[in-house]
Amino acid sequence: MNSVSLRYNDLDLPNYVNTREVFAGLNVSDLAKAAVLGGLNFMLIGDTGTGKSQLASDIYKYYFGGNKSDGGNGVFIRAHPEVDIYNEIFTELNIERARREMTNSLDSMVFFVDELNRAPPVAQNQFFGLGDGKMDYKGKEIQLGKDDYHLLIATANIGNGEFAGTFETDKALLNRLHVALDLEYGQFKPTYEDLQKIKERIANPNVISAPVRDISDRILEANKTIEMQTTNHDIETLAVLNYLEHGLNNCQRYNLEGKDRVWPMACQDCPHNQNGNSLCSLIKSPTTRTMEVIRKYAVALKYLALLKDPNIKLSPHELVFKSFELSGAYQHLLNPSSLRENFNHNQKLMAEIVGQLQEDYTSVRDYILASLEMVKDGEKATRFYSDHFAGGNIGLYDELNEKVKKSGNVPLIEPYTNQREVGLKWMNEFLEYQINHNKNRSN
Image 1 (spheres, one colour):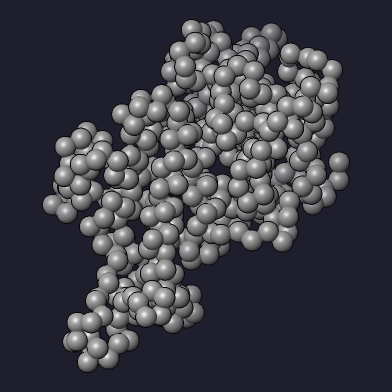
Image 2 (cartoon, rainbow, N blue to C red):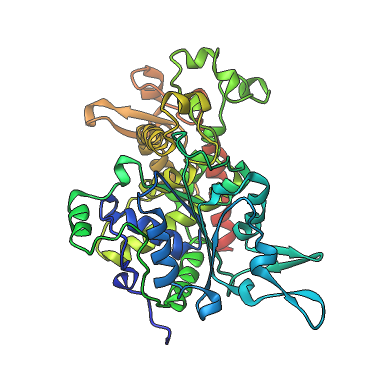
């Protein structure tokens, strides 16, 4: 197939149906498509029969042409206790030479692991390489994929204790499954109309085999564009990323004393968490890998949203928060006690907490935007006042005359402090960095 720029309709799925809108005109199916375009590993979870394998299978066959051994770009693995991907997939026995040799499965673009957690934890260790895009064999590091693109799609039954044949999944492996979609979560379930459309088809309780089609060249082209766009974030996007990374690392109890906090145990008797629902106690800062995922997935969501509707208006901070919601639910960032109280509904609890984080960010956004505006002029603005006679609009305190300042009628507001649940002191360094960065770029 000749390389042609990707169109939104090229990403239509042949069997899986889920048009429930989630964000910025994107539906549940689009969330998976954005992960594909971003080259971000993703995990589909939920009860049996919720469409996990159907969605994964559609992408595997209809986007990447199916099995490598049949001329496609993929490798399919059904996880089980005795799974051995080294000997079953990536090597084969050369009888004449009496040794095992690598197969061409290594340059596959997509690896589809169905029922991931039906392999015990020791066997799941084999999937680390699929997540990292590299395997080790006889002391050599071997890259997986094509043109720096590789994708791991996993399905799993997690949750309600009804799945006796499943095992726990290691935190480090989950960290390599960048985006998680819980298809049992109420906000991700198919609409009533979707279900009716499914009923119009020939009844088939099994995963329907998708037509074999390969649009991997277009996906590669889109992926390269997305990668380049991650190097050119607008300044508010950078501010929100810092809000998550550094603001959620704040602890009013210990950080101010120069001590490392012990999260979440120390939150139980913390004077700043008397009601047990302080944001700093509910969620912690993402790891470096997860922060990179948030950056890239936000761009991929934007790319797909504009591909779907070129006229849509997108808010930078809403993109980042949605990316965080979808990439952080299973990254061990949520307070375990809060999870138990919510019946281990990670996606639901994550959505609720991210909603609270957005409210908190919105409460200080005017100050942040004002500071970011001053950065353009090489000035660091961190002191403000609120003009109650002008509808509560904020102004720069340092621009007031001395007489007004001394009158005490205009209170000084200094929002960039860690004396709050989500810290903002990082803004001082962020503004200095941006000013210096702009100076260096202009020289």
